[in-house]
Image 1 (tube, one colour):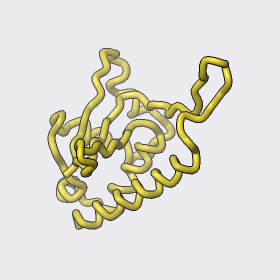
Image 2 (tube, one colour):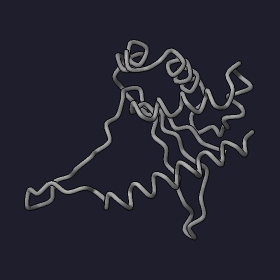
Image 3 (cartoon, one colour):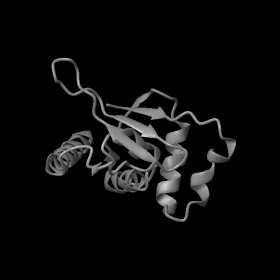
Image 4 (cartoon, helix red, strand yellow):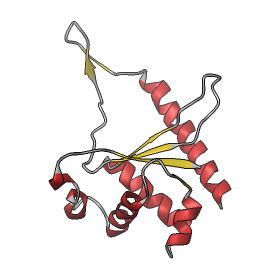
Length: 138
C-alpha cells in the first residue's frame, strides 16, 4: 500500500494553480484533484483509484508519471533500519517542484549531487519495482 502526503502551502493562489497549467493534460488534472481529496497520510492503492474511476490501471499509471515528470508528484521509497522497503510515499505538490540538477561546493565548482550512473541505475530499479508493485495490485 502507498501513502499520500499533501504538501502544506499557505499560499491560497497555489491551491488551484494546477488547473490552469497548460503542461498538464485533463486526465492528470483530474487525478491530481482526486488525490487532493484523499485524506492526508491515508494509505491507498492504484487499484482503489481504479475502482473510483472508469480508467484502468495503465491510464492511472500514465497520469501518475505525467504528474511526476511535471513536478506535481514526488515519489519516495523509505526503508526500515534493516533495509526493508516501506510503503511508497507520494507527496502531492500544489505548485510544480523542480528537481535540483546540480549543487555548488565550497570551491564554487558545479557538481552533480550523486554519481550520475548510479542515480540512473537507481531510477531504473525504482521504475521496475514500481511497475511490479502496480502489477501486483491488478
